[in-house]
Amino acid sequence: MFLKSIRLTNFRNQSDVGFEFSPSVNIFVGQNGIGKTNLAEAIYYLCFLKSFRTSSEEFVLQKDKNHFNVTGNFGFEEGGNSEVILIYKKGEGKKISQNHKVVNRFSEFIGSHPCVCLTPDDIQISNGSPSGRRKFIDVVISQTSKIYLDSLIRYNKIIKQKNKLLSEFEPKKIDDFLDPWDEELSSYCFEIIRRRKDFLKKISTELSDFYNKLSGGKEEITVSYESSLEFTETQQDIYNELVRKRRIEKARKSSVFGIHRDDVSFKLSGYAARGFASQGQHKTLILALKLSEINFLKNEMLESPIAIFDDVFSELDSSRIGEFFKLVGDKTQIFVTTTHEFENLETEKRIFRI
Image (cartoon, rainbow, N blue to C red; front, side):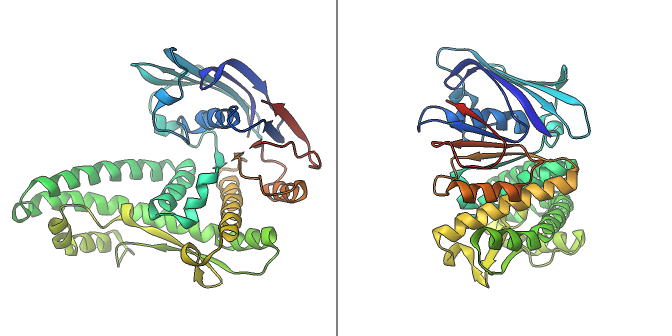
């Protein structure tokens, strides 16, 4: 898949602008603070219908304007085109259409235009809190599985209802109310854990290979899933665990067990990356993880995702960037924001000076 063109109206610092892209490498060049990331953000909007920078469209909308538009035209490897139009209006929210048909459920759209995005904040995937690692996994798998995304949405809704119950009712009076919640949670929990583990298994070998190609080393990278529940082999196991842990949750008045508390462990040669790895090792690990993500999406969806790299190559020279792009693959369209032009980069590219 590749993005042929984009048009922005009242989006951040862009009042009305359009671009036509190369199916290979596209580089947005300009000084810091001039708006390069705004263009990467707009492309992300076309794939995920939201920003990777803010949860509020009010910050994206230009001052004194009442709406912004993002329009993109995509082409696919097997043929066919897709026009995506996103319109945000103050007081009305977002409206999406694809090929002139209104998108009523945003969750149904996710995965139709696969995308991988890497920003400086993504180093928190390996070096930050568990929530960042869960978010990374959820974004990837949700693009490949409607069942996973639907399970995740339903699970999160029930957890909110369960937490409200735990916080507002006397512990002795709520067991009968918790039983159906925990039974339903166990169903979604089982599906989500199964798919998360399957994803990690599929990327584990490639992750080591990519890491060592990028670093020139021979370290073994291992990745494993760490559940907050001891037994997760069956749905019944999970339900039994939730019932056994109920005493703790009632005492804390909160749901402290389940997939919303799980984690992923990355290890370099047997040592936990979070406490052991240097800043350089973390950066290399994240680059390798994104390469693995690209290949996972290619294999699962039989379509190359587009790749957005926002301000992450400042410490690499053109030759190392070129080697990285080779690992990405020539069928993956790449968007880069940077302050320099990679003049010696030996690949087909289109440069946009912002």
